[in-house]
Length: 229
Image (tube, rainbow, N blue to C red; front, side, top):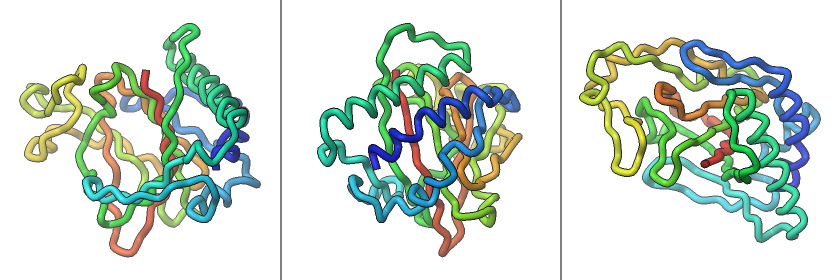
């Protein structure tokens, strides 16, 4: 799948350049037709493709397929890195961020989420090993029947953020909402989980969001590409 992802970057760049920053409730992008239409089915059926390693994470309850770069040639990996870095800087530019000539490479993970998913907190994508994170989640449903499974975007309506959230040691900002304080966060928007769309979220200070709860028997597929600076 590495070369399949690589072949999409120029198209993805063009789609990002044609799309606008959305500011409700905080800066993000929702880019449609992000994968070339004739290639979309291959991405939906990623678990049948070559070059991926399956693993189940008992901490998150998520089945993840990781790109195995050892299955590809050095030139293929090098070209993927070049295109991925080019895409990152295109998106960063849209948000008015400048990283000059810094090379920033992503992790690329296909996700299968079910009712066993344990990640249900309202959070910001903050990590101990980085100051800035750009998360780009490509929705991979087969049709519009899972529209309600999109990411939920929140704003804080309380008066004591420090008291209502958790900040792990090593992170720059509070990034997890305490379960008993979720009433102080208002869901302003739920993005539609429709085919071939990308939700782009920088981890700015107020980018609170949440993954949906999956109904028993349902499967939610996506591709997460995440750049850490």
